[in-house]
Length: 88
Image (cartoon, rainbow, N blue to C red):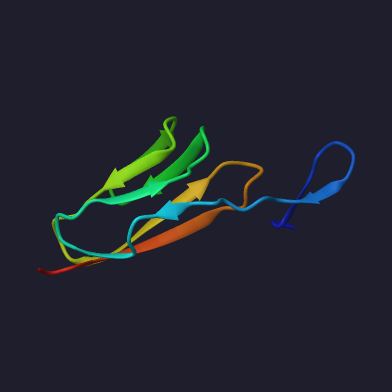
């Protein structure tokens, strides 16, 4: 079950992230900030991945399109955020 994990005594509900996203749709070259990311979270983003140790990610794109960010940090449930970048 992907919604629960065993904590050594019981099966408990996996927590969700409490991410804050500055915008879900932006023009090209505009920075999007995703914050409230727990330390040690793996962020899979367009172009690669990184482990967050400062609580946030700043990102922008030069090409219009839909971009997905995935967040993984057990025991949190995996979460995805989609950002749309539009032409100016």
